[in-house]
Image (cartoon, rainbow, N blue to C red; front, side, top):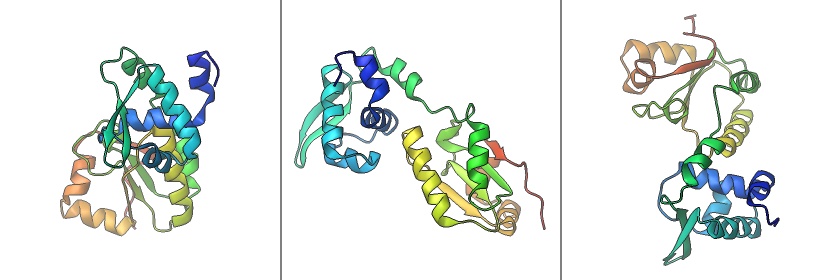
Length: 193
């Protein structure tokens, strides 16, 4: 790796993905192998990234039964600036996201909620209202967004009929979306058939 840590950060995909994952998933310590699986990078690249992050004081390790476990050093002065730098801005990428979601099969609405907009009440990050979804395209899209955002996106796909039925029944999952912080990436309130 290069001796300039900023240049290394901006040019190493594995490092960015590992750092995003650790910054957004406060789930304790993870081994290099577990991280490689989460961020879909080769193990040697993840180990190199972890070594660089450790030498910068951003990541610490502890001994686990399954090997070394890595976690964010919350005492580092670099953590908050890194969180801001690496945060995927869903708002700034709204047009691109709308275009990407249209490729999954003409959704009537895509609602961003949960961790995307800071709605802690929501059990999902995306509500997709569509009567025809290409599951393979959707999974590929969500996997890519997960890499960019640093966290696995929780989502639900509902037909228009299911969406209105759940709203009418005051379904808790939907109430926690529409009654609190949310944004429409595509459409607005879907029209009933």
